[in-house]
Image (cartoon, rainbow, N blue to C red):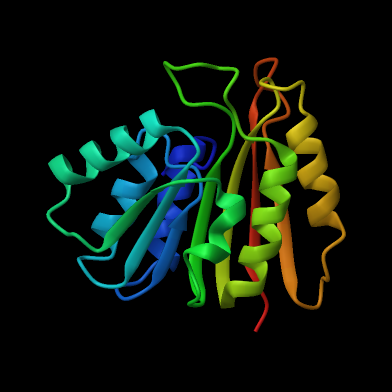
Length: 186
């Protein structure tokens, strides 16, 4: 396991914190890779909600899930993750964000800090005790504004209710991604 590869780190967290029967959310489905990994991990039990604002992303995610996962315990939603409360009423065990824009598409269509923070506020309310949120943020797509705003928001949430960690590569290329991990305290 390479902890410095954030995809592998995300998979490690999914493998160790997502159980069959959990309610999980892919807040930015993109090509559907995180959704597929989550769906396979749950073995047909529980439920996956997968969001993306781009119709193309939801098409790619649906295609990826239909072709590569034999389970049907998911719903792919063409809407902003900021509207999560319109689709989910249950408590959430795990959520993942991979911020930025959809690879091989219009890079002007991307996540933004306002919607992401609205979404985070709603997910924090729905998160079960010991539930996990993973956020992969990229500093290059908007000069780091989304990452910076999320950092400030997370730095100020109640430490008695949530533990927050920020992982970044300090000797990597010009715009390395960063990971935020949030866990709801019991």
